[in-house]
Image 1 (cartoon, rainbow, N blue to C red):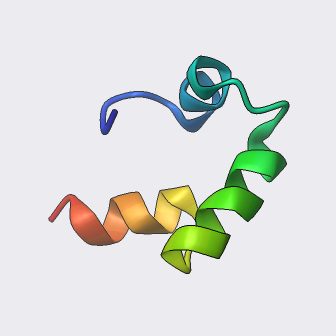
Image 2: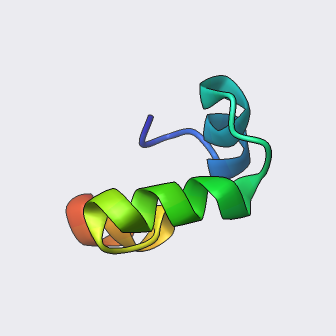
Length: 42
């Protein structure tokens, strides 16, 4: 999903909005999806 926009991922995974995805992602990964992407696509 690295080429998808965050809003597209939200829709595909069935989250109600980006903030819901962010809370879920931070809980399990310790950072926001955008920060995770920045740090792991180097």
